[in-house]
Length: 267
Image (cartoon, rainbow, N blue to C red; front, top):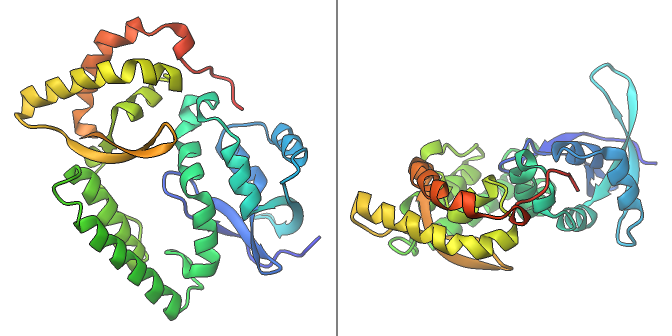
């Protein structure tokens, strides 16, 4: 067992963050907080993890708010990545699904960047590390600028704000009504599984797009989403357009058979 040096919260957008530390110079994530953040039973998930040949599980001591020393189970970056990859978002309760998706997309990179690249809110980041982050953010902003007119303005603004926040070491300020909303996002929120989305997303998307054209006299913007195993360009709306989705759901929702909905049992 290795003594704990410092326990920190590594920020991951859309989540409460990952509790982690450095053990022998390597970033280690506390396993229990991740599991509980996803609404799952810790003991059962730990037993499953220990049964995986790829899992590297370690223990370290930490001091609680009451001053007492507690033992925590930690996993390295590769184990965390593999563990999250084995979780099916469609088998996690709807209320925890956005958190799982966010962790699957960003957890490993955030963990690595925090300790090795001087992450945005890492108080130990050096000037060199901060300059490197700013340069990386600037490059990404320049790349995003090239997509102007090709993707939805709200989606583009959200991405640029995020990169500016990274460069400044701050949290991005994003208008909730401007957050991107796609047919897939909406159906995820309704608990429609992958098979159901493949069957009904096209028809529902066509109706939403028709309503959008009639209301705004223009085509909706575009955004990039990870769909069916690849990044794909899809029609992009914003949270302010949710009423269009609700009306389309009123037409199609009742036609979706029970087998196309996810269960409420956590993985």
